[in-house]
Image (cartoon, rainbow, N blue to C red; front, top):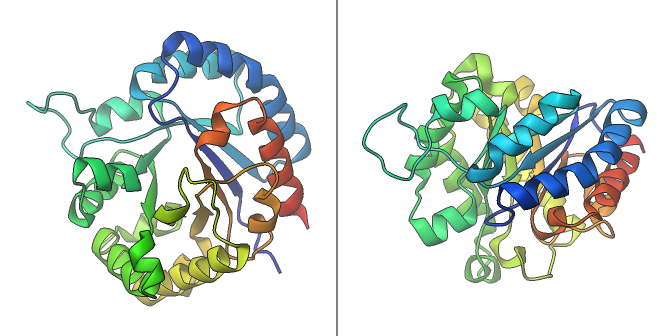
Length: 265
């Protein structure tokens, strides 16, 4: 039976859509997303995560119309509050605009050398500044084919999510994103995604207890589309999705709709 956790669909726009295009696209999808999240499915949260340069633009559009079930998320942030860190954005800056932040995405780890230690510091900084962290974990193709998925997931969860403040344990969101399925068009099967999500919840329970594990939100990310989202949401331990390429198209609304319908079953 599905637990009554809020279903979360987060759209990661990655390095796409500067302010002008972000405004156009947001205005295209907001009315339909609002109808879905506000009138029909109150247990659904949609998070839009544009690039940093477009955050203010999307923030203004959300503020103008007040969409209570649609929130803004940053794609990354540094753990220091201020200083000589050229090109970074701080938790204080993110907090001015966003309720959420994606941390430790596989592309950040792969291309920019982010480690579990850095993700841990960022997660603590997010909690300190009342920002919901969406922490990404997942194995690469070689690790998957070698049967090392659980070993990798355990190391990432323990390395990035240890010693979290007790008062924030239920606010964490983990996104399981098998790297071999990101942008490849090859999604994990619902069974794989569900089994790994169950394992993640078990690990979190070992660290923080059953109550925290029950409250934990776990998303699946990796070539998610409107056609396959329902099969993932159907698993009791999958609470939504972190969506990449499919979040850049008007069809994203249909994806959110399918997720909402699946969550009701």
